[in-house]
Length: 418
Ligand SMILES: *Cc1c(COP(=O)(O)O)cnc(C)c1O
Image (cartoon, rainbow, N blue to C red; front, side, top):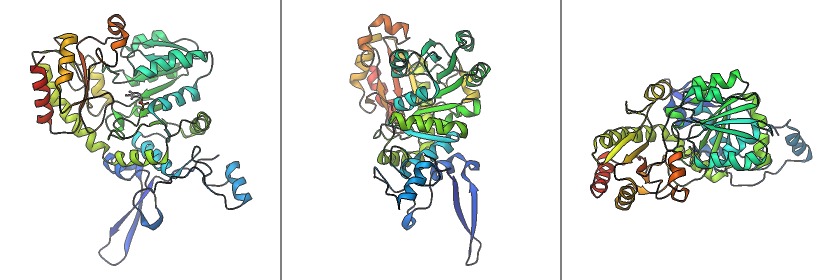
């Protein structure tokens, strides 16, 4: 199996004033972010189609025995079977690779499938992983159950404190897995400093970049080796796909990741890839609009008497505000805040919001709100919740791209009832 090296080139035509067109080819990687979002991964298609066709096929026929043999031996260029390669999936993968600034990307069935693919590609029994303690719940569970059953050790530490990370390094540390800003506390970890620690110990820095996305944070620019995303969130952005992606910085390491994914089998399908690729075109517009709304909402909440504190990377009150300014190009769409009235206030607020939808997930065009203590983390019990810094009045808001006055009015009437 050999992956086609993507051209990434786009063709641009400019009229010379006469009848002939001038043909310009420029590497998409040298273009601006908005241009990348619209054109990356797009090739030439049959009938002059301007978007990649959905190749909804599980398998591809060979021209003859020799052709099939060449494809399997990696000498020929072409498609064999959709779990291995599919043109619609590849188009989306190429687009994400360009936006993140990595060599190649691998489309996965979900964000968790992407994270599992990274663990399975890099780690073996006896290795040790350092992971942010404030991390997407299933990531921590995957490490503590499945990966631990396969003999992989972990230390869950506060990665927003670089010295804590340094102290957790062991001789068998092979990976530092960081989520920044983290879920749901929005603590920020210093990527450049942690990359140095990882590389000094021959370990990889893997970053879950789901919260910021490639528009507002590109971890490769700060030393990361692998980036993962849940495509379910802002990259698709329309709450109609579950998907994930792994982006690998170095082209040389990519074939091993591809082989591992091919064996594990957690691939994304062509139709979901098509939807994600469509979502990517407006990614910069969407995340900038949501981030602008979030800034106004965070400032409003910080002054509200029924709110004890607000955690948002754009507020100077954020404990790692300076680190955030250094490594992020914006503040994102996620806000956490603590209601003064605790558990009861949380329930009341949740039962009275109308525009913000009471739902998990994040990064979509619609505002979503949730109260971990009474919803996602209710069964955990207060003691465990407090250890994980999930306080009774904690509310997590994923700000959408609606008119900010409408979001604010909805929050205000719900807060009035608390
Ligand atoms: C949602 C999410 C995931 C998991 O993604 P799925 O697509 O739901 O599997 C991983 N990390 C973060 C930060 C997330 O928000």
